[in-house]
Image (cartoon, rainbow, N blue to C red; front, side):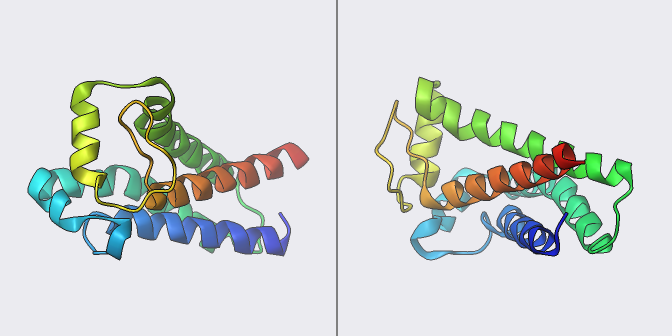
Length: 155
């Protein structure tokens, strides 16, 4: 992978890791609604929501930093591709499939409670609005997946 792509990869991973670790805990203006999150989710739910995706992302980030400008072992490259592919599939399941095709009334109600006061620029569909902060995360995850798989295909 070229140096520029490696820098971009580490920057994207850093953003994603910061998002996963902080978005339910730190107020970000209209990008999140910490009061709604605190009212709706228990600290254990918020901790699980942070650690389940955050630990694999932290490991992937650490591997990218460790092997920066050096050849990665095959297992590390597979860890990165697998981690970000699974994260992206999770984002599709959590946001884009319900947005495009609909979901349960329970999920719609939960998303309205958690994200109804956050900034969004897409129109609502099936009661779901993908907010701006999550679009930023999903775009960075997709860019990460593309970078990782382009590098793999180029080998």
